Length: 415
Image (cartoon, rainbow, N blue to C red; front, side, top):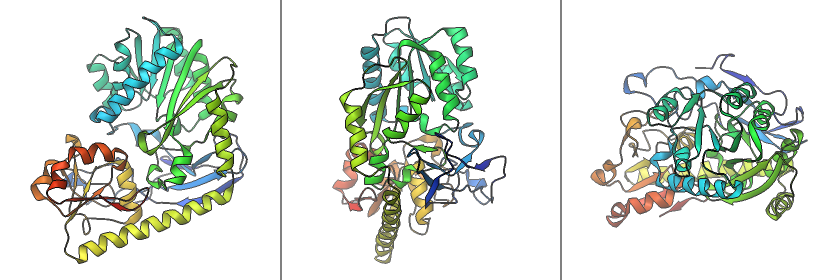
């Protein structure tokens, strides 16, 4: 079923620089909302599918989706919760320590987390006795966070909301946004909101998947309707300058297959050597050249061909195959490669609210992860490959019994 015009619209100009010089280089859709898991009695209903086309702006270099799906569709009832991952809990604790150290924040200073989810990151700041506030558009997660004592405003972060928060709570010494900026359509309004709310001595610290990692590791499953922009540092720095915000430092971090942690301030201080280093790396890697993205498209096609060929060769040998991790990334792989229940008997996942449901588009049943050892399938396609180390360690008994994991990205591998 096609989506209505109220739910999705086509981008006519670049969301960063307003240029209409956009190159369409990859089409992965149409696909359903990747976190739109289905209850058993809903799986025979017609689903809504949305375009998943990717463009490169030849003027500023920003890679972005060609269509925007309404945030009400994407975020009203959100199912990704980072607190379920030990990797992410450790990651957030490290981020909080670093943020306090870099800003010299003290007890009582305000820290705001945009896209605060269930409040996991903000809880890490509580140990420093800071004043915490979350903003998140997901009604289910905002309710959960408030119930757990993390004050959270349910809504999208905008300039108007920033003005209200400043009036009610004062300036923020620290503003965080992990995997949020990439979700924002109106980047100009968003950054004006940051500028209004951030104190002169404060930092806006954001994280998002890094475009170089996406390209080099062929991480096409990072591309889905929530992620509107795919940043490199070059267009980001231009965009920040436009709003009189300054890129002070950047760190490459391993989460989600390769991301960057960016530090932004209101004062025009000297950028770190790492900022200059990454700008040089992007020029060297051809990240601003259209041909880079045309080559990427060919590599994506090759991944699909090799993965489908492997899975079907195993099925022809009567091997049992399941999936591990009912993730948004995994659902992009499943839908783009057209991998359904005829190939994967089921998907196992540790998160209770996904269990008993079916994956969007391909309608593969989801079971608790205990089913992996109970059934002992020959092969398991690791769909949540960004947590591969954590999962493989956790499922050591499965491997001892002879089970094998298949990793599709960045290179097709059997572990």
